[in-house]
Image: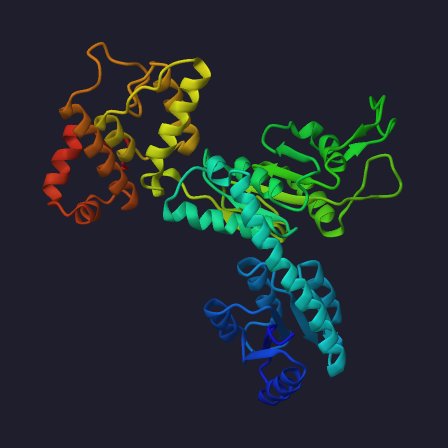
Length: 446
C-alpha cells in the first residue's frame, strides 16, 4: 500500500501533522495542503491517488475542491471530513461524486480502512483508463474524430478521460463541430457501451408532445392516450441519453429533468410510483447556458448539475491543418461510395480551404468535400459549381485568401479597423483600401 499517494487538505497545521504521521505509519505516501489553492497547485504538478479534505476552510471549501477534482482529475476518489452540522452537505456531495465522508472527530483506524478501499478503487480506475486507451486505438477514435492539431489532441485526451467514468457530461461546441459524434464516443468507450444510446434533439420535438416523448405515459392517463407509451428515458435504461440542443428544452420540462437527474427516477404520467432510472446523461449545447440562466432563459440549477464534467469541442477555424486532413478524408470517402476516382487537390484549393473561417465547421466542410468529389464544386469555399474555365486563377485565389484573413482579423477586433490593422501589421489606410476593393463590410462579412 506504500505506493498509494494521499493528498490531505486541512487549514489546521496540527491536524495535518498528526494525519501525516498516522497515515505514513499505516503505509501511505502523504502530501498535505493548507487550502484549496495549494491543493490545486499540487494536483497540477503531481497527481494523487486519493484526496482527503476538510469541508470547512477559509476561502474556498472542500466542496469546491471536490468539483475541481471531479472535473479536472476524474477518477481520483475524494473523501470529505465534516463536522456534525455538515453531514447533509456531505451526503449531497456524494451524489456529486465524493467517494465517502467521515464525521469529525473521526476514528483514525476507520480512516485507514476507507483509504485502503479507495486506494483499490483508484488503482482499478487507472487500469481501466489504460485499457480504455487501448480500446480507443482499436475502435478507431482517430478515424471517428479526425485531426491531430493541438486543440484536437487536448479534446481527445479529455474525452478519453471522461469516457472511462460513469458520470454525466455537458458538451460545448458551435454548430457542426461534431457534438453528437463526441457523445457517441463517450458512450461507445464507456461502461454502458452494450446498452442503448438514445439521442433526443430538444429543438426538434414540439413542446406539446415533449413531456410524453421523454417521460412516457400510461394508457388512459389523459384524453387520447389510447395506449401506454414508454418514454425515451425509460427506453434508454442502462445506457446513455444524449440531449442535443439542451438550451431549447422548455423551462417547465427542465424542472422535471433536473429532478430525474438528481433522483435517478422517472415519474410516468398515469403511474402512482416513480420508476428507477439507470442512465448516463450527456447534454450538448452551442449556447452559453450560464448566461442564459442569468437571464432566466435556462434553469441555472440544471446547468450546474450538468456542468460538473464538461467537454469543449474546438471550432474548425482553430484546428489549422486538420482542415486539409478532413477534406481529403471526406472527398476520398465520397469518391469510394460513388465509384469515382479521387480528384487531386490543387494548391489553390488547399490555400482557399485554410483561409476560410468555416462558420458551419465540419458539417460545412463535409458538404463542400462531397460536392468536390462529385465534380460539382471547385473546392473553393462559397462556390458550388465548377466554373467553365476550370479552377480559379492565381489572382482570384489570392484575393479570396486575403479576404478571409482580413475578415477574421476584423471579427476578432470587434469591427475596429485600427485594431485589425495592428493585428495584421499593415497601415490603417492600406487596410481601408483592401476592405473597399474586396467588398468587405466593417463587421468582417462580405
